[in-house]
Length: 87
Image (cartoon, rainbow, N blue to C red; front, side, top):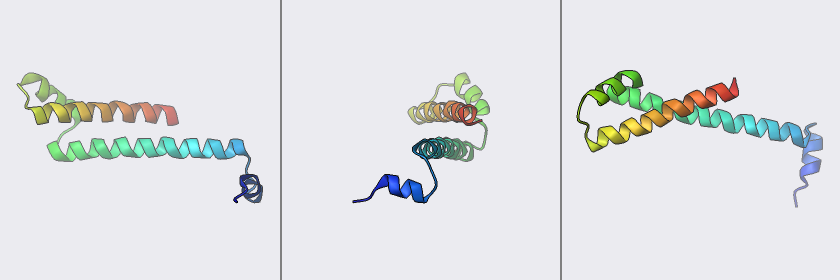
């Protein structure tokens, strides 16, 4: 059986340090995920979310456009949230 305390001692790390490092890594993972989603939609529509949002609001949207709008909006807002949290 693996003894976590022994491993942490060998790595010269405390449980608190490990928890901090894992939290930071998980936060950065979230940041990367939402950045990739934002990049995907920017490439798909060849414009920023602000530009897409203006066009979306001005026309009758298809189901796919509305679904992309919701997903893209969530990605943009989540990216901003994680950037603020990690700064």
